[in-house]
Length: 326
Image 1: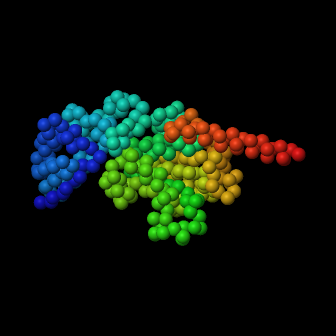
Image 2 (image 1 turned 90 degrees about the vertical axis):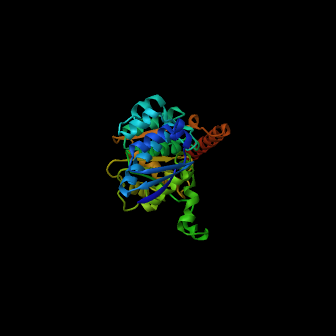
Image 3 (image 1 turned 60 degrees about the vertical axis):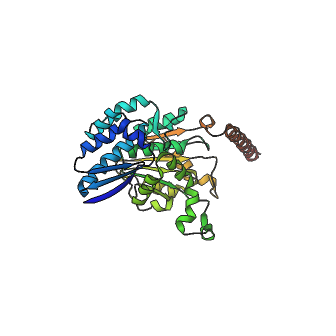
């Protein structure tokens, strides 16, 4: 006999097990060969290995459903145990909600261009989301990736960024290579923490279901059955962008996000994002969503700051043209 302890993270056990343990009793009757003991967030399962594996797979589907839709009725609980798909009807009820975060808060497309990104994700394999800081490009993209993973449409989420800021100075930073690069990848971790419970996310990272790595780690790979997001793409060279885009494998969606006003390359005009947009503008099965200050969902001052910098950039461009014409 095998014993396994499962921790129910990111959900309310009282809600999950139902009024008077109604859902828990249904679960026990569905797996009569297993002994189940529930104490708070811990669930102890005793039985044969094969039975525990089947039980765990079904339990994960139930938990994913609750986390995705933020509710789980007794009828839905029973239907899932009987392998009946109830997610389509539930999705219609939730409208424009992409998923529910770890705290039960709905993650939804809040602006017109965020909604365009959601729509394009269902229709295209390669998407470019370009716009200012705070417009929700990356956050919405990661929400779509997590939703696809939870719905078992893909097997992996791969998030990557060019570590331009680090450059040749990595050796001066403390820690091993991963510790040196993690600060540049932190915004991606932050978004994932909002959408996947900590323990589950740690498991996903450990088994490779969720991969977060600098862009250089993509070289030589074929990325299949995944949602792959390249963030801060304005800091890639054209060579890096070509390398990334040619990693696309079977059943894979690529989302490229970037802000062309924040290019940190020594020669901004050589940004791979700028050049690839020009090269691929008229290629089929590629969507381009251009975000602007109307999509900014951070502090209201961010919109004013973005406009001020844009105005300054316009003035500089006019001055450059005037100098050239002299």
